[in-house]
Image 1 (cartoon, rainbow, N blue to C red):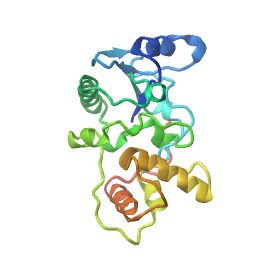
Image 2: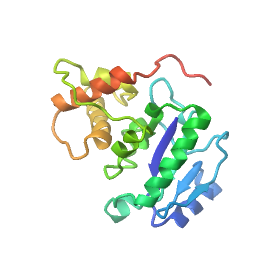
Image 3: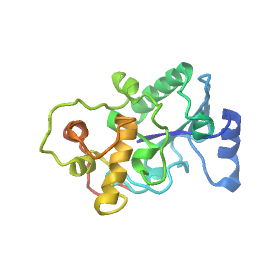
Length: 213
């Protein structure tokens, strides 16, 4: 898998320094600067400590199953600015290579917020997931009609894991889904949410069997 993050630090240099400092116990395979420079910090064959607690499908140790890419972006420190064109172009080039080298399907390119909806919101609402999907580097839902579908059941089929049982957990997954696919949407689950997640679950269901070590 590949997990996309934003650095939420003032600049790329500060982010690289943090990711290389042993006392912080965090790392990522790649950092992409605003100008498109790609900085590799960890070999792709090695584990990096970028994901933290969370899950996607049957995978609960995401650090062992993923490559982490940090996009230099101050996030909440500067009002969530958009991601510059050179940075997005570099990300597309990097993803193309990663997917080829490691046989990673488009549905396995996810947001940090997807696998940790109670803790994380990166790369955030300004990130252009549809652009990646149009290039075959991620997935995007069709808004087919699915009036009788169960949003939570379909979200789990797609890969989301309920962090808590009941309505609170369902609301957390809805928020993570909307952050990626319907930024700005508010209110209870509606027909568009159900149609979108039903399409994703139908075309890209996760394997819920136990993940390999």
